[in-house]
Amino acid sequence: MAFRSAVVTFPGSNCDRDLAVALEKISGTECIRVWHGDAELPENLDFIGLPGGFSYGDYLRCGAIASRSPVMQAVVAAANRGVPVFGVCNGFQVLTESGLLPGALLRNSGIRFVCREVSLKVENAQSLFTSGYEAGQHIRVPVAHHDGNYHADEETLDRLEGEGRVAFRYAEDVNGSARQIAGVLNAAGNVLGMMPHPERAIESIHGGTDGRALFESAIRGMVGA
Amino acid sequence: MKVRVHVSLKPGVLDPQGRAIHHSLEGLGFSGVNDVRAGRLFELDVADTVSDEAIDDMCKKLLANMVIENYRIEKVA
Image (cartoon, rainbow over all chains, first blue to last red; front, side, top):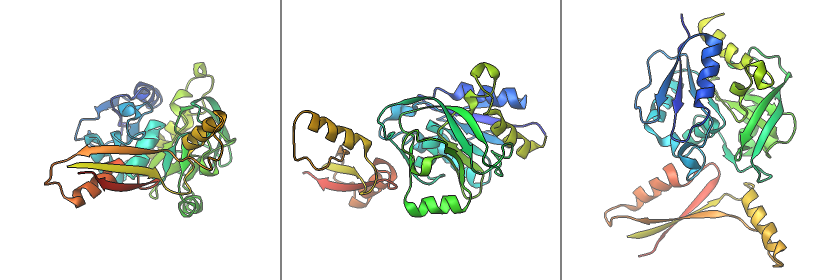
């Protein structure tokens, strides 16, 4: 079975090509590009990617307008059927705004836009997206965001921790995120949102390849080695 | 009908923007400001036939993010 992936482009997405290229280079199959106004997704997808960027100019709240776009109704339905959905940066904001992931992403505690490479600790190495890592492993991945300060109430945070749904944690304080959470999974484990950009760390020319294992894990999980 | 929707961060949710504004006020020499919380104001012009429930629904579904924000609806005229 060939791996079938799709990446959604919203007006203002700017990492959609990076994400599609990462998926294509690692899977060896074409990544289908979907427009935000499409009411339907291609059938039999193994992976839906929501890219980074500034959808709708970050109007209202980051990801808020995109999460109400026609294609997101289809993405929510697919996620609820168990289709893997991966949101990076603005894609993570879209996932929290759509209710597929708990919490919200606030303005960075330091006010400034943060654009650099950070160290992440892999907290859960058993999920569909992280099985290629070792639990506790530190990886280097770039971040580039203004609103990456993860917030949820204490009860939700405790539940996320208890259920192993914190996929990645910053090894240092990057943006004020509660418990330094960088990426979270949904209860079923088929939806992952994270602020750092693994798709920007898949070739040595990027300065590191620590992001590759995330895509390799998902591809292996969906279509076998 | 004019409707104002005031959206504010829930108590306890950190407000880095409010903090920066607070800091800036102090920098300008204003003393006695204990705290600043930033929010948003929406001014809606809606048909008289639009129900209160519908306006409430607009707030819950889009204007406010109920995870972090509260809203207050004010009918102007």
